[in-house]
Image (spheres, rainbow, N blue to C red):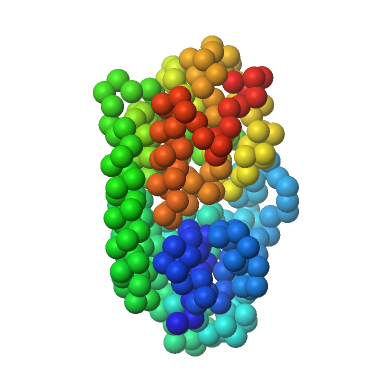
Length: 299
């Protein structure tokens, strides 16, 4: 089977199912597993220059020239040449990847006999269901069952819902402030914390930074979508400049953390379980190397 993944999370799923050898096309943002994708052609590109700050990216998305998935170009000629049997895409977020509708339109225009599957998980269970769905189309059901069993066992081993547990603000975007939504509140709950602003499955929307002072989070975790930890640290001044920031319990107690959002929190793929484990390590005072305490000037 020839597979094209138009979503980094789908590439993660393909790899976890042991199907990387069937992957003939990917996005320009696919970066996992490291070293395994170098020879697989990218069939997408972005019109955004690099590097940009979160504010500059937000302004570009809101501008007249960019609307949703118009940020991304799909190489239809290459797609036709690759002749995939299965294309994996999404219709969950217009600014995260090429949309399901655009892919369907492209497939019709080039007259490919291709199955297009849209992955639209909003919860951890939904992510595991997506893995099962891809497995059902690729004959890898037994491997999917192993992945689900392992994920459920690891999640069950975490502290889980804790009455009176620490309040956690997960920041998925800095400027404007957007809290982590969809599966992130569940990750926080599994880790033994209480998610602020959003509940399980909820779509994130912009919030004013001024609401944070009233929430007084015990822990703040920064994992912006598409940003490396280094890029995130470079932008923490946005948060530190907000009125009342220095007085937050999380800042006073040095409980401000930076994590790799794309790897463990932003993408609806199997590594969200790792993300829950990272949060649990933070909340229980035994953070692992995948979490960095923010510099003192930011918390």
